[in-house]
Image 1 (cartoon, rainbow, N blue to C red):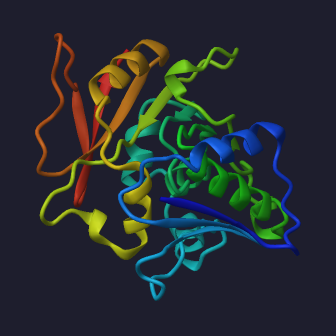
Image 2 (tube, rainbow, N blue to C red):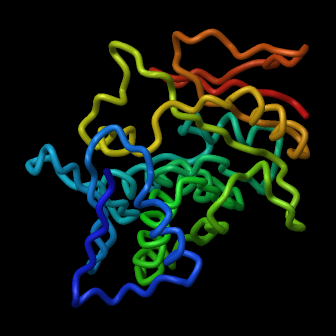
Length: 247
């Protein structure tokens, strides 16, 4: 069950569309009882484990700022896969999630549009970006911060922007030693679960991208091959890899 808790001193104003979505998402099928808090920040907590740190996105975390300052397209594997052969590409992050990869790509010279189809995760992203816009540090970044598109699927986008590259990071099916057991991911997984439409989404994204689609996969997982579609190569990334599909 999902519970929505609003705090009387919250300054966060939701659009009419989001108000409607909040009513709808109260009926979301979640695997554990979760509460959405709308306070000075927007965050999620797991009712069964009050000691678990709430899930709140923060683009000013020390870890992310360190990656921004010390990473770049020559060190970050995701940036290597996305930017290879291209200068300042337009990138759709089809599954923005916590938004970290979008920030890394933006700071690696890409122009990133973030897509997220889960309205709860989208709301956390929107709140984090609003807070980030007040940061003098993030304002000083030469390429600015990523743009968050309206809540929905990237493959349904009908606007005028044509992406050079689409980055697709679906939720992995659960494994015995999956990274999803990390504490910060328990709430995330309770909301989203494993993506069951990877092949159809991948095909749609390949048809959308001007140049290529980058699919993030577990290192030990077999490449996704179907209907004659297969990756032309990959960039290794430790526990994961980034498979490259050409348009």
